[in-house]
Each structure stands twice: as structure tokens, then as C-alpha cells.
Length: 213
Image (cartoon, rainbow, N blue to C red; front, side):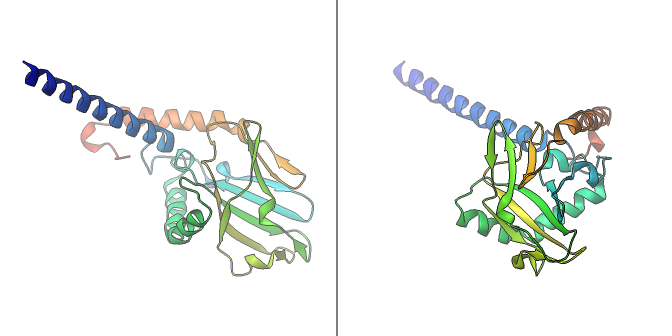
């Protein structure tokens, strides 16, 4: 009798661990992808681009988060995925050097609007939940990025690494020095509508031909 009881207890404990593991995996998937399939989105990259302008400099930011990227057109999605894959080793290295285990990524572009325009990557700021988040580091994509100076109409880009994911399903503010942009909140209904459209299309597709997430 005691042997049967111990066996039952072990099986119960195993089932609890299994359920917890499955629940954790489900939550992780929901957080990172919203369970959206790839190559079904119809939004262009501009829809996910936020920008600030301080007179001599324009700065653009695109959150590289699957919850947004999967809403983009297939070409835009594949382009961003290729970009991340191309620099994956450098991204991981910068993240490890700065003690970041689960980084948020963003593509950031600096555009010179006047000759000899200086810029400072560390002044990029994301504000949400009343907190300011500066980049933990970045991976330069342009050879002259480290010069931190731009000529008129010159552009440089980098992949920015944050210590947590960018909250793309919530309102946040993007700022550089005194220039700010809180337009993301006004885009949320459009993102939600596209997310709903994609999920509805998937549900109406026969199981045998449903795209894999």
C-alpha cells in the first residue's frame, strides 16, 4: 500500500512539473510571438518605424520584436530576420559582455540634416511604465558609425540592445535629447486589427495547410 502511495505521489509531482513546463512554454510563446504565423502580415515597415527630429539630426527606430515583425509584409519580415541573423554573433557578444540574458532589439538609424552633425548613441531613450531605458550596447552596421559624426544627408545604422524586451503591445515614448515621439500608442489599434485579421485567417485555414508559427 505504501509503495503504491509513493508511486502515486511521484506521478502527481511529475504531472505538476509537466503542466508547469507546458504552461511556461505557452506563456513564452505568447509573449514573444502572439502565436502569429510568419509571412501573413500586410503592414509595411514604415508602420513600425518611429522617428524623432532635433533639427540637425533625425533618428529612426524599428523594434525588432516578433510581435510586430510578424505583422509586416513577408518581404519586410524576411529582411529584418536576415539582418538579425547576419549580426547574431555580435549581438550575443555585446549582450553577454553587458550581462544581458534576454535582450530587446531595435534597428536604429541616424540621419544627418546638416553638415558636421554630431550624435551620441547612448542618448537614445525608451520610456515606459514611468521608467527610462537606455541601450546596454549596440552593434554598428555602418563603417563610420563609431565616428559619431554625420555629413548632410549621411546615414548610419546600428542594432541596439536593451536589457529587456521593448513593450510593443503597450504605449512607450522614444526620445533623443529633447526630441520625443509617443506616437506608438496611436498605432496600437492598427496593430491589433492586423493581429486579429491574421489569427482569423489562420483559424479559417484547414489544419493540413495552416502555416507553422
